[in-house]
Image 1 (cartoon, rainbow, N blue to C red):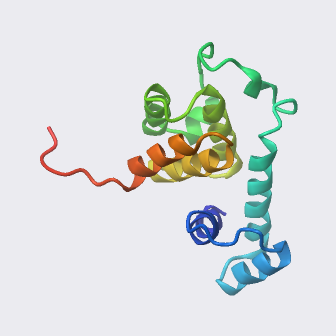
Image 2 (image 1 turned 90 degrees about the horizontal axis):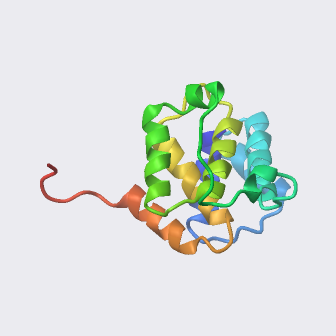
Length: 157
């Protein structure tokens, strides 16, 4: 499913292509690209659920005040998001790329991937997808893009 999300993100969203494609046409294109139809439906549902996270009345944890939240990970979240991923989430929150609300959206979408473990690169892409879908987060989206694509130069100490 994650491969399909990446395909859609790179070919429609990130490339600023026409994203208003009929679902049947999109499904046909994805099947033609070699993706499994069940996984396609899961990916499209994942994206729909991401859009639904904008309705904070349905997701009460999104009503938290950004500066008042302390995050303690559940056993399942800790299993899926290893120490490196949880550390990266804390890092991007501390530098202001995400806030506690977008962090919760990211965790929700990571668990919805139904993977037993998540690698750091996958986490970064999900953060980017979430930021793209949250109105008013254009600057944070650009910062996250820089974190993903920027290659370090010179010696690292």
